[in-house]
Image (cartoon, rainbow, N blue to C red; front, side, top):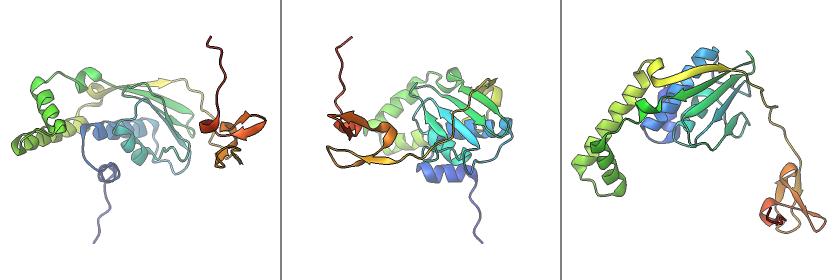
Length: 203
């Protein structure tokens, strides 16, 4: 009999490997769904705003059903382990910030080991040691008390409009089709952003 994969197993399968970053996204999503009393979003019932493009975002997509394709995953390039989750059903939103002091405690030995592993100079023994340490880190993230892992705040939030479908127009330069709101006009004809030359006087 085939057993249904757990949400964590599905996240690993989607991402391709186990790592602390994936565990952070999984844990953040788990906490958000619990606080919002929501399930995975089949459409746009949930909205996620992520402030990084790291491994954890893959877990957010798997766990919450928020994806770029559906328009309910928004990426803001802030480089922070901060996430906003909103429920349209409940008209509620949460901001979850992962405690960086807990996640990034200095460990010179592990930093050196990591450098060797990713630099391709680690021995088999060092690789095994690093993998074991990463495994322990993952388990710690998945099971540490919520209040140690992150800060959860309910916030006032203006939900953006749901994703819209737009007609496409053909670029007069390269011939490729582009979504109408992303098209520009050049010499009186539609062009895509790649073929558009912006005008500025340098102010």
